[in-house]
Length: 342
Ligand code: AMP
Ligand code: MN
Ligand code: MN
Image (cartoon, protein in one colour):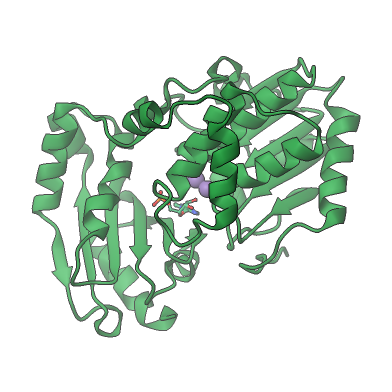
């Protein structure tokens, strides 16, 4: 059995030095496989590619970065430095010497690559999910970090890798994504200090923000209109704190000619609804299978709700895989909300 780390847990000096010595021992001559979570977001890709570029600067040559599932980079991240290191799941080494894992709260988020955990000589896990299940040989899990890229930068510093503009762009995209453009509560002084170090390399925050937050196809806008138009308000959910939710089907995507990842941005307008605490978007993955995104403004621990339903995440932003109809998923969530008031 593994145990979830406490939200306040941070890596110890021994954890950091174990990570440094493992990397120094295995990376220079071994095959290094980096993996981030399925359906990668900005933090998953940015922390993984930023760290991979850092290893390349150290002279590590046998490097692959990957994630499980369809080999598709969401358009907002299609310009990230280091994408040349990315290989499809099927091409990833079966028995790497060193495995580095980014932004993965639970083994299930490795998808079909989960077998690499047993095959690798050592596994270093870099993560910031309070719900992290504690897999891996060396665990750098910082429940207080705003993004996995905070942990990645800390490890690059300890490996004496200086930041350059390409590494910085990757880490910045990760940080900006997971802090909601430096708006969420975990936007600490340390987050702004890290952003300052990254921007000082010469990157262009305006260009990056436009690409990752403020750009989408016309068809995606029309899709959002349909999906937002069917949102439902449930003011009595969560002991009266209320929930708003909506769903998007594969048919909706097809009708507007859009790819599934465009729906990842849809939680933002939904979570703005003033009348409620909890917001949710239920996105069809396959017949009767749904990726569920939940957000809270502070009354409900949606991470606990997600864990109870087989998923994970953070107190105020979490997800899981749901089954049945969208209504079935909403009922399953509603039933759990009252048990996880903060
Ligand atoms: P999302 O709503 O996809 O932006 O995800 C919000 C948070 O929940 C992220 O930190 C994810 O890592 C986590 N999360 C989302 N879906 C799952 C899942 N199926 N299992 C575990 N964690 C998840
Ligand atoms: Mn993530
Ligand atoms: Mn993250």
